[in-house]
Length: 130
Ligand SMILES: [Cu+2]
Image (cartoon, rainbow, N blue to C red; front, side):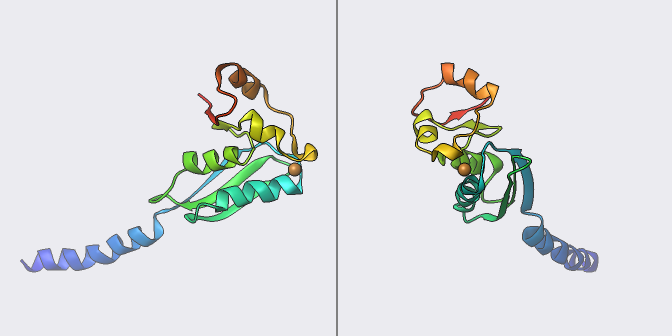
């Protein structure tokens, strides 16, 4: 009996710590864009999810690094919002309508896989890249 209580006492702090600390995850994903306006748009789209703590898009590397609460959201959901805002990324392709609505300086060169996707996708939808 004593040992059960003792192990419970030892286990509890570890358990609580894992709830608080182990949920924050970070990913880096390829996201297309050109300029500072793109940076703002991409980061705003990622941060629209309140479970995202930080989002930073690199103009030179075209990568978005996001820290998020993995118990409440995931990479797929976040990258979907980024595509909804007009930016192709490694998981989703923005709709042509949204892409064409971007400022002309923001209309980045679409990667080859996006062109392939264009043939099989409904252009009004955000498409998931396979
Ligand atoms: Cu831009």
